[in-house]
Figure 1 (cartoon, protein in one colour):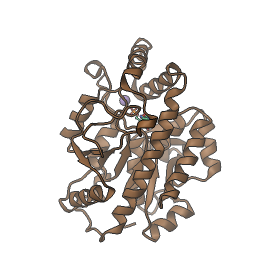
Figure 2: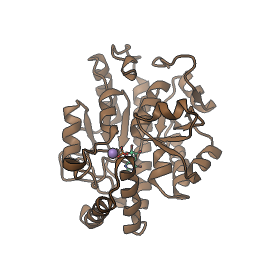
Figure 3: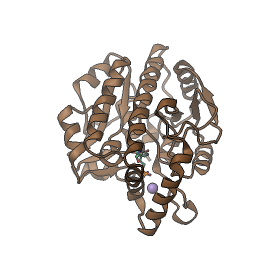
Figure 4: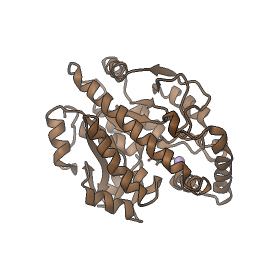
Length: 325
Ligand code: PSU
Ligand code: MN
């Protein structure tokens, strides 16, 4: 709770379970909601969101799924709201650029990785589990399409456990961008950067750790150094669940070409590509997607516990001012 900087009228609403866990200093794991509204089809989206919350609980942490409901930042959603979100068609996909627009306007919106990091930080949550992060898109040379997730990592102190980034992005440029922004990218138990459905992108992971405790120690050191921003914990999908990159490559090429032909731009690009990949793999990609989110939830719960186990940290100089640009 020590990071809670909100003015009194910031509409930040905690579920009872999350409020109690934070007050008691117990580990909490944030979960995003764009994966529910724009990342997976109904009903798998709702079933997965619930099951992932359960995985977090089974691993000793409290889940806090984050979304904007009627202009309120909700930290922890009840089942009925999750269910409604999973069916709703007119929910905005919110990133840093449109978060205040949705809250001030009393709208409903799901939070991307970037927006979930902002809300988690406001709520005093250090760790967040998701599937894949946004990145530099293929064809960046002409589109300039870089996910706001990447700049958020440079600004907001949250550890995001993911399975790397999808190979439908430009992964070498994504890693270059993160390096330029000073964002640590940690391969968990691997020397290779994972590519979502596949355990490896073939690219080296910039850093490597093999235990949650080692990651927690590094995060604390970043704070002692006064370094702003978060870290990417890239946790490869388990071998039994992976789809080898050769198998998925042709489908990716087709989806990217179709997006270009259809002149899809802006925030519609990622949902379009995810939807096409699902169709082109005849749903096979979904099982892998679900499995890797669970795998990430387990590690995130362990990391949240590791961060709580050790001595309280001094207030970093740059917190919480970095939230106000
Ligand atoms: N990548 C995935 N699944 C997802 C997303 C990305 O494999 O659901 C979602 C996340 O919410 C991520 C967002 O933050 O898409 C990135 O969108 P954009 O590229 O428009 O920044
Ligand atoms: Mn984009």
